[in-house]
Image (cartoon, rainbow, N blue to C red; front, side, top):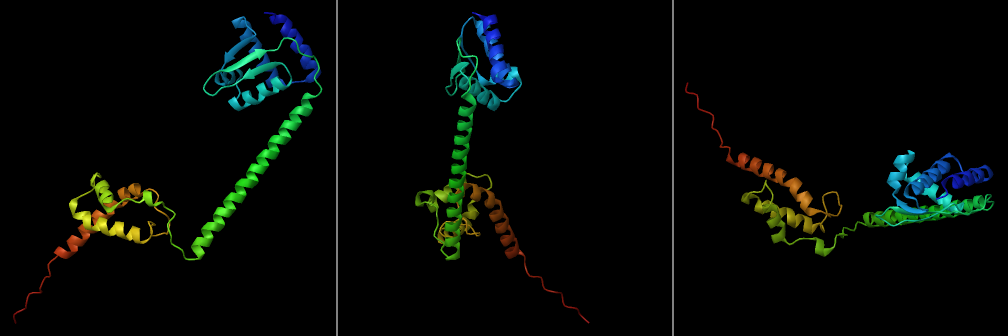
Length: 230
């Protein structure tokens, strides 16, 4: 491998094109890796590269794209695998069009991001208008799908699997289920109940306390004041 010759050529190339310190460090690191493997093509992950250079993986990604745009390397990436690199041996010492190409790419990416942002904003505005329309019109129709609403039997059977369940709660569970069903499977705030199991698990202790308080209240006997004998 012509290690020293490639370093000398790269140094001349940088004098004409001014790659920047990060790009210089990464190219020399890739060149060193190729030299150690005695190959012009090799595989190395972005994680290893970022650790060796002391930069983020995002910086590694943008820098290798820059080196490719300048015609110094080629690379292929595949999710879950190390990046495949190939060092280009013969490249022109001065590249004029790269800056224009990079500028065009940046402008195109910025435009795409701007369009995506505007699209996202429009979608959220439409969703907000739709929700306000439903709220203002007084509609209470649930957005929860029917197949997400359990049967009363499934509702109580799930409650039986919880640690805080006892059989005396069946009537209260039935009442709670019927109230949610009457409200089109919405809570007291009018929001759809998307995870009824989680909500049931959190309110079950309160149902127990309510039941105990009710029992306690009903079991307190009336006390008659003793008559005073003159």
